[in-house]
Image (cartoon, rainbow, N blue to C red; front, side, top):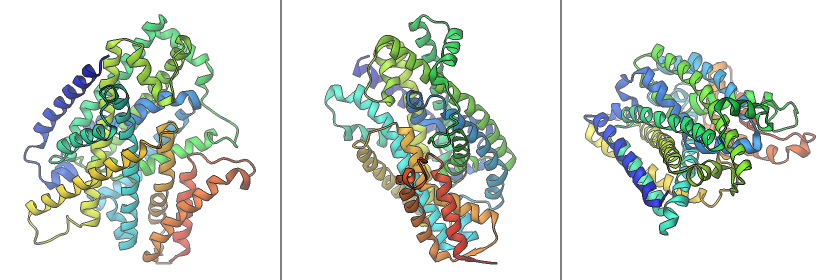
Length: 481
C-alpha cells in the first residue's frame, strides 16, 4: 500500500468521525460535556466501551504479546470479569447514590481535602501516562508506514493526531464520545474478524483447521503453575480482577460514561453486558495473535518487535484489502483511547482542582472558556509525553501499560478500599505522603524481589501490593470514628 493511500484512508475516516461529532455536539453545554446530560442509552454505552477498553494497545500489542506469553493473558481477562462484577455491585451504586460528576469527590466526603486531591492527582498521572502510551503505539505505526516515506518528522505526526482529537471532543465531550466510540468499536472488531479470514485464505487452511492448529500449538498454553513465575495463573487472575477495579471502577474516564446513563439499573446492565462481550473479544485477539505467529513462521517474516507483527503482516504480506482493513481497525482503536482520556482529564481538572461545578457568580460562558483552556493544556501534555515515549520503545506496550498501572493506580486502590471497608478517620494531611511512599516501596521490592524472596518475581500483582501498603499506611495514621 502506498503512503498516499494510507493517508487518504485516515482522512476519510476522520471525516466520518467529524460528521458524527457535528450531529452530537450541537447545543452541548458543560453538563453535556461532563455527564452527557444523563441521557445516554445503556446499550450504546456498553458497546462503545468495548472500543475504549481495548484501544490500540489491545489491537496491536495483545496479538504480538502471544509470542512471549502464549495465552496466559486470558487468565487476566477472566479476572477482569470478576472485577467488573465488583464495579457494578459496589462502586456504581456508591457513585449514583452520591450523585457524583467526578468520582474522586467521594474521597473529599469520606476523608477530606488532601485525600481528595491525592486521589484525583494520581488519576491524572495514571491516565496521562496510559493514554500517551496508547496513542504512541498507533502514531508510531502511522509514522513507520506513512510519514517516514515522506521524511516528515515524528513530532508533526503527533501534532496532527492530537489536533484532530481536540477538535472533535472540545464541544460535545462525553455526549459525543458515546456515539463516536460506537462507530469505532464496530470498525475495530470488523477489522479483527476480516484479518483472521485473510490469514486463513493466504495460508490456504480452513478456519476450523486453524482453530485446532492453534489449540495444539505451544502458544495456546493458558495456565502457568510455577508459583515463582511472574505469570503464575493465580497471580494473573487476581491481578486482572484488581486491574479492572482500578483501571475501570476507579478511573474517571470509564466511569464518566457509566454515569451518563439514565439511572443505576441501566448503568449496571451496561457493565454486565460489556464485561461478557469483552471476554470473548479478548479471546478473539489472542487467537489472531496465534495465527500471526503461525503465519510469520511459515512465511519467514522477520519483525523487529512483537508490536510490529500485526501491521507488518497486514500491510506488507496479505495484500491491499487486508492492509486497508488493518488501518481502519487501527485508527478505530486509536481514537477511543485518546478522546476519552482527554475528556475525562478535562473533567477531573475542571471539577477536582478548579471546582468548576461549585463556583458561584460565574457565567456558563466563563466556565466553558476555562474548560477550553484546560482541554488545550492537557493536549499539550499528551504531545510532550508521546515524544518522550518515542525514545523508550523497548518492549510490548501492554506490558508497560500494566506496569505503570501497578505504580500509579495502587494508591487509589488503597484509598477506596480503606474508605469502603473501614469506618476509621484518617489524618487527612498525611495521605499524600502515604500515596507517594507506597509506590516507591513497591519499586524497591520489585527490583530486588528475586534476592529478597527466594527467586520470586513480581508481575501485575504489584498493584495489589501497592494498594495493601497504602491501606496499611492509612490504618496506621487513622483513628476510630
